[in-house]
Length: 180
Image (cartoon, rainbow, N blue to C red; front, side, top):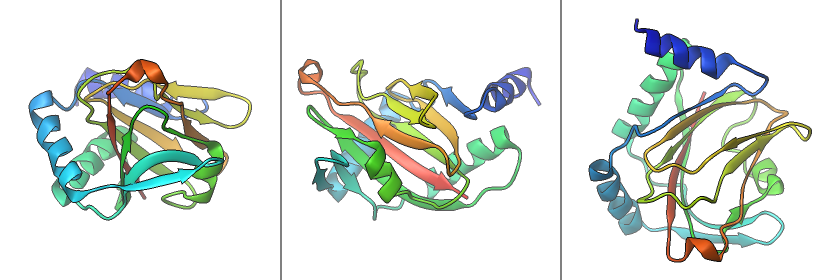
């Protein structure tokens, strides 16, 4: 076991919200074909003003990628996990996701891990994912190629900040995978 893995494990366990962001895990030469693949598979628009606005695909399965993310998460949390539901998201100018949306459409009930892979082509400086217990908040900055691993408990909710005009034609691609 390397010191790097131990450091990542310590960062994950630190604090009330157990989470870690691993930057630059997916290179652009792998991310670009992924974007093309999910674009080809298609997205359904979601828009309920009090819950969110974005595009989603909850049907697409890529078992090899899901297993790769599961194995990565297992190394960090040090216990076996099973692949749960996956959602592919595409966000653009004017898109967002609110706490109410998370409360109504959780991928898994109870305590579980949420792994978010950002395979966007560029950073936007927006669309942070914010996890909160209603008092304290933890933000995950949008970083292409990064993987965020967050332990979701029943008291923790998530929202994604609004993408304003400064993103121009930027598009954010995310895979959100529940691990049980």
